[in-house]
Image 1 (cartoon, rainbow, N blue to C red):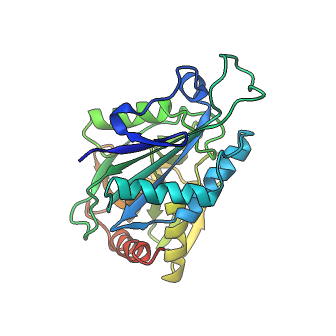
Image 2: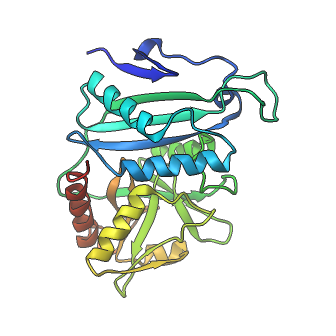
Image 3: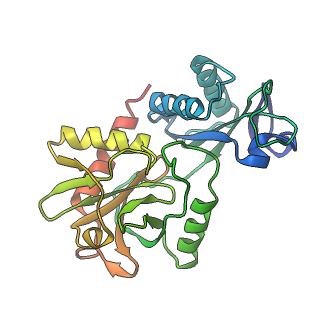
Length: 283
């Protein structure tokens, strides 16, 4: 089946999709993006993703080339063209094409690219957990903006891949955990507190993270937003990560050491099941 992409007003075969060589996203990483999960035709947290997209644009002094309604229409049409039922929708907006200059161009038009990808998601019960490693957090100081400047994240993910691990957990100079290379990190401590780092400029406030926080609250769980150390993480009863593609994924081994008994915990499994039920009700 042919794949289609959306590029600045046109739906084109994926293999022919292209942007100009002087697009500022290509030359400076001057752009933002979002990834929306689709499960059985249902978009997960679409409103939250588009709201965060606008926030990221605002922080970079950019304007969206289209309204939220128009973006939704493109997303829906692109999924139909690609016959996508379960997978991801990738949205990227850059400052557009301009002569190469570090300063912002005055009259450039923002570029909008959208693609989709079929992904086989584990929507069943987690029978086995994943492993992770810890790495230094080498990113810039505005991690709360979802930009396309992802080289430090790629280096971290590659380090995990080379060690056969699922994720790299990034650690700040003070020894506290910030987040994963492409996910938010949660721990369940011995007092049954569900702990995740506070959403400030040190982390990206994940949309899936926010949904899991709400779902955990509905389960009457005690949720604490604060930083935590690697040592505290290693002593936790459960560790898991959340993201659009990970949903809720348990980490049973970190840096070669078991978390608790090295098995998927009840809380991670329950939150994942609840999240999938929630997505199935999304409009």
